[in-house]
Amino acid sequence: MNSTSSNEVLICMKDINVVYGNLAALYDVNVDIHNGDFLGICGPNGSGKTTLLKTIMGLVKPLTGQIALFGEIIEDKIPKETKFRFGYVPQITDIDRNFPALVKDVVEMGRYAKAGIVKSLTNEDKQKALNALKLVDMDHMLERPIGHLSGGQQQRVLIAQALAAEADVLLLDEFTSALDFKMTEEVMELLDYLNHTHGITIVTVGHNIEILRAYCNRIVCIDKIIAYDGTPDDPDLDVVIGRIFH
Image (tube, rainbow, N blue to C red; front, side, top):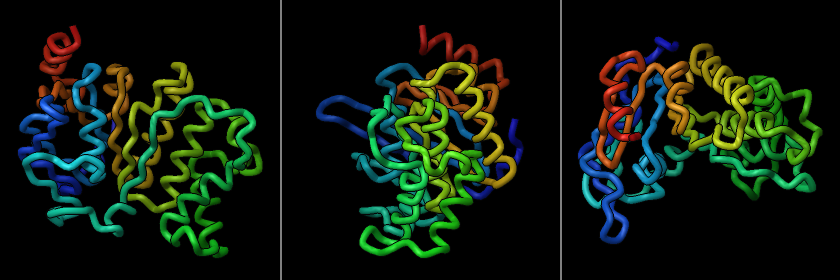
């Protein structure tokens, strides 16, 4: 379990309310995410987990409340340079085996986010993409089509893409849902390594609570409201899980 989190607040959500039509998606949410956190977010289907991530990234605008990112209050749109400090790893579905993109091409897209899509990548950009692949132990696959990889390997490539963009915070949305238990453990071990060794702040939404408890240093349970925010070994977490999942 990680113990590298500091008191520096990277993401501050205060009194956040999000509404879709007449339905409340998030209600009075207050969450601080600290530098070095390995935060697991859990909750039943429709509880607002993904909405929480989208709100952080500026893809969903709250009805009321305030968000501060890296010490700056966001009044309207998130500044471009702030967006680049996030790396988003989505839930994967099966990638078509005939999809032509090579592993190195997918990871280099992370550099285009920094350089601009119309610019050519420099040798430095390509080296940073290669370094990201080395971090996730996928540099030996750089010439392989991504569709030929296993689900766990594809997930590592998407993490490398976020790392190539030099993200300070990785946001992962149900990224293990298509993986078996062994692959899930392998990817969580990788995230644990990145968190411990490279100080990358990680926020992951997951449905497997026991996996989150095994690796995260902090758990947030959400059911439109924040039902729990604390350590994974607190007995109160069991009470909350029993209440909102059953």
